[in-house]
Amino acid sequence: MHPDVKKLLEVQKVDQSIAKIQRDLDSIPRERAKREAALDAVRRRHDELTAALRQAEVDARSNDTSIRQSDDEIKKLETRLNGVRNNAEYQATLLQIGSVRQERGRLEEAGLTLLEKIESMRAELATAKTAFDEAQRVFADFVREGEAFLAKRRLDLEKVSVGREALTAGIPPDLMGRYAKMFGARDSLSVCAVEGATCTGCYTTIPPNLVVKLQAGTSVVICNTCQRILYIPE
Ligand SMILES: [Zn+2]
Image 1 (cartoon, rainbow, N blue to C red):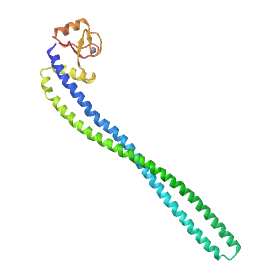
Image 2: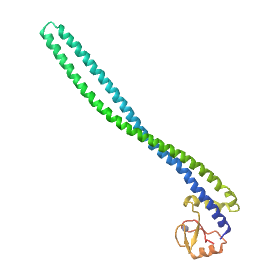
Image 3: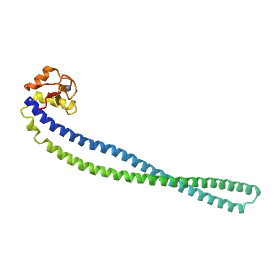
Image 4: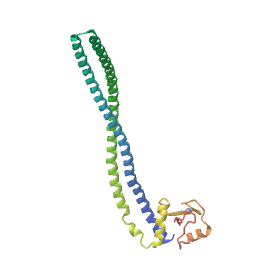
């Protein structure tokens, strides 16, 4: 094997470990954002139900006030009825009382509908609150575990990165550049083995003249198809 390729293979092992750790480091914040958005949706549902229930309770109280006002109005009209001086006024007052009673009946019905609505809203809110509490608990667990995992992976990253610099010593910069470019472009596999006469990176057959070059180990051989740096395992 060409000595520079041998070195690159060692560098690649380190870089693959680094890439794996980096994927973990990237995945946790992404997952956290996703979960946070889901938690926000559960929170919004809970808050909306809370606000709607409050509004319904305000409506019910205002409806009760209207019923009491109707009662007062009826009492006032009945008192007036005792003091009327002629039949026309008596009939008019009776009509007025009838109309206020009718309105009071309508309000009472509306009040009952509101109470039923409030009852079902309370049940719905209780369910939403349970879901929200549970979602908050699960999210807090995730954050705690995620942070512990990130701390561990950051330590792993420090550990595996130690000595990488030394491994690259003596590798020509243009080869190093090609390696780095292909490592990024070819899914963390820049230096790859040839098995039989097949590139294990792209599974195409390597021409015999390149196989001979590889066997000689005197020059760096690139796959014509995937541009990876090739080697024959020793
Ligand atoms: Zn290839």
